[in-house]
Amino acid sequence: MSSSDTLTLTVDDDGVAQLTLNRPAALNALNTTMMTEFSAALRQVTDSGARVLVLTGAGRAFAAGADIAEMRDRTFGDMTDSNHLAAWEELADLRIPTIGAVNGFALGGGCEIAMMCDILIAGAGASFGQPEIGLGIIPGIGGTQRLTRLVGKAQAMDLILTGRRVDAAEALRIGLVSRVVPDDDVLEEALVVARQIAGFSGRAARAAKECVLRADQTTLSEGLLFERRWFHSLFAFDDQTEGMTAFLDKRPARFTDG
Ligand code: CAA
Image (cartoon, rainbow, N blue to C red; front, side, top):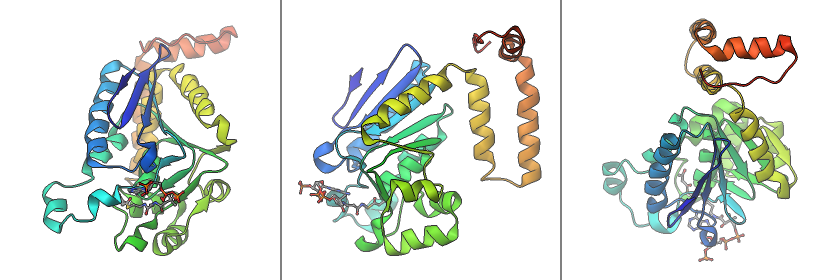
């Protein structure tokens, strides 16, 4: 377990890392300290050999967005010179699968970070939105791009231009989240899913993630070729033989990432 001013990180024996945004008094508003510590925590996750990351928030929010108090007096020069917010993108670059466990508010940058996760599990009382328009700005951690890819132009325009919030049920209906569970079960459900994925071949899980993400970035024919090449590549490793042999022997597979 390691803690910083704004985050808590644990990595368990199953290879599941749990990173908690931890500024509950400010609804986990994303400030510069948290961004710097987040970057360092992701390096720790990678160095630990963790196979899956669960990202969640302490208290009654996943995160209520970028820290407005910190940003109010910033100038264009401050923002552009520091390339403010760019470091959050490191979450999207993580090669292992990531699961967002969202309780309460996921607004603005909070919604944007949630959308970087590969699987999103929301509590029934969670709410999502991009309220930046009401602050005289627009989303800045990928909201205009990821939300549009996830839910399509009609829904993304509605949410980004009005700033309205959607509850978990609507988020599920429009394809913003993967599962909705009772609020009290969110973290446990995320950890169960994480342990399940951590029990599979890590190489297959990373390949699956890379291929699915490729779908957003390339043509269908290039994406299909990318997938087929990965599919072929997995036959170079013991986990493929083990997985198929275990199936035929009617026993659980013992993956070793070999
Ligand atoms: N930045 C800084 N502080 C925040 C914050 C934020 N984004 N969100 C909440 N807080 C603080 C509040 O100021 C308050 O602090 P104090 O107790 O010191 O007054 C504390 O968290 C609790 O918040 P509220 O009293 O407002 O709680 P509530 O239950 O009445 O309302 C809320 C909850 C609807 C989420 C409301 O806090 C809210 O609207 N927050 C701002 C949401 C927002 O606009 N997010 C977008 C930020 S910009 C952005 O994210 C840009 C980007 O793309 C990166």
